[in-house]
Image 1 (cartoon, rainbow, N blue to C red):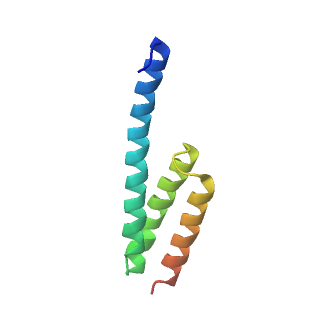
Image 2 (cartoon, rainbow, N blue to C red):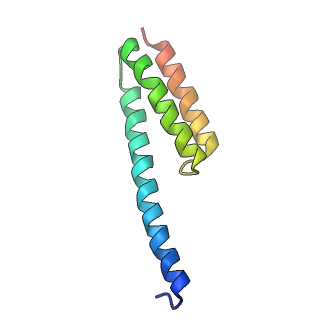
Length: 84
C-alpha cells in the first residue's frame, strides 16, 4: 500500500475518476446502441444531436479518444440518413 500522503490521495482521486469515466462511457454506449436500434427516422433525428453532443463531451474530457468519437458520429449519421 502507499506510504506517502500524496500517493494515498492520488489513489483516491484515480478511483473516483475511474468510476465516473466508466459511468459516462457506459451511458454513451447505451445511447449509441439505442440510436442504432431505432427504425423511425423522425425519432432518430431527434436523438442524434444528443448522442453526438455526449460523444463530443467524452472526447473533450479524454474519456474516449477523439477519433473514436468521430468514427461513431460518422457511422450514426450514416445510419440515420439511411432510415426511411
